[in-house]
Image (cartoon, rainbow, N blue to C red; front, side):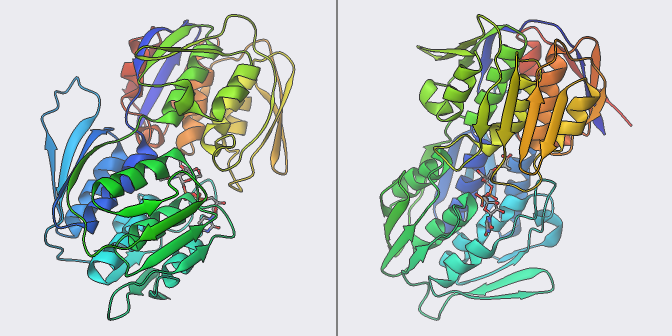
Length: 427
Ligand code: EPZ
């Protein structure tokens, strides 16, 4: 398994390109199943999960063609054509590798009236149930049964029909699954307490470009008027706000200055005020967002919440930054039940963190020391990279396949702005 070696202490400076958003790509890809015409996605990030999703679409008989990108380019153009669907089963061996596979449930049900999808099971950060996905699809008339680890779903004989869903908990995936099913359901669907993450806005805009009728985009109340069919489209994936926020933390912890190409204050949304309070400075420029840390870092209090709250996907990265801030920080994770696995690894580097229930109390220390550490999940692995960039000495991050799921060519991007970082094949 590959490892990443970092010699800390280098100040990052220069231009760093922000790739297309993983969490937008993973919901735009299944949207290709909703039409028999080609859907072309531009600015697709080169990530393991995007490749896995391409294989999954092939599994259903959809073709996927990646167009003309030179090896040195970031991002790709991919055209998916699901003109003939030959299977409606998403097998365990693919779903277990990528939980987002559950997002094929709604589109397959809407297009083919039937879907058999392996239950994704839990993951490192929590047990990640899918009850809200299933209840939402049942509200559109789907009959759902769970047998031998699979979700078997069937639409009524006349196809899915519009319905009213009130989500008791905000769920990004459940909102995406139900939205993709509703666009082809007969009649009107109302989704209340819908998630409002920018990636859902991206999905809704793509669906509208394909001919869907959706109102309330970006709000917690989505109104969908079903249509008989959708047509193909070409759509550019939005920039990745979590990648941008992660590299902003990297710039800040090294006391450097990065121009995050393609990012903006608006893209970072709710992460921005928390990072500004910590002492990070942001300036919108013509082609991106200039990030610097002119003075010291200060401890902050932050609590994760659905958009427009502070993103749970930024919690681990902020924590890494706060380990060397002046004063104490209190970070509270309200979305997932086990999203502090980076804490013991950061402690190996000298961080002073105490977890009590859902909150982590971070006391800033003068410096971190490089150490061998282990990535446990995607954002935890990024927090270890951020810490390693500032730590004295060498840090080896093991199990970097976690990183490859969400950060396109990370070491190349960081090398180009001065980091002493390389990928080495490890044990
Ligand atoms: C999406 O996961 C993202 N993944 C996650 O990003 C992100 O952390 C999460 O949204 C929250 O923003 C993708 O978009 C591929 P949820 P998702 O449904 O949809 C509970 C990353 O690092 N819940 O909004 O799975 C759930 O347990 C990843 O890029 C139910 O109880 O998240 C959690 O506590 C990690 N029942 C809360 O809702 C359900 O049916 C929010 O989960 C569904 C969810």
